[in-house]
Amino acid sequence: MERPADGRPSAGGTAHVRRRDGARRPLPALGPAPGALKKAFRTSAAALVAAFGEPGALERTVRAPIGEVPGAVALRLQTIEHLVHGWDLARAIGQKAMFDAPALDRLAALLGRDITE
Image (cartoon, rainbow, N blue to C red; front, side, top):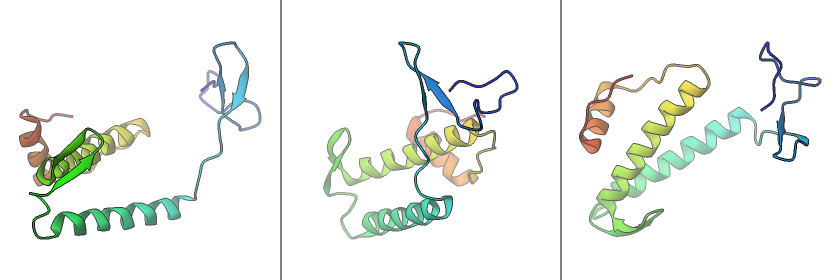
């Protein structure tokens, strides 16, 4: 994104990107309002918790982005995705990621390493 030295969006408040050929184009408008995004995330998260809570869910083979895996592996992947990308997003917007210690302990165990800020 092209911004003046002071970090404000360029040209009348619209952020732009510069293509490889040097042409500028405005960034696409953000999608739904933050409240709608929060609601969609909570609905999706509740469905995920319900799906993994079903009897036999961890033993069942499921399709994941990396292929077919046992449900337990899919749950680990989801845990890693949410925590790692949540941390990354918080850092990108200048916020501190606020995860509880047990969640971080589980992530460290899944990754087989200590987690430090």
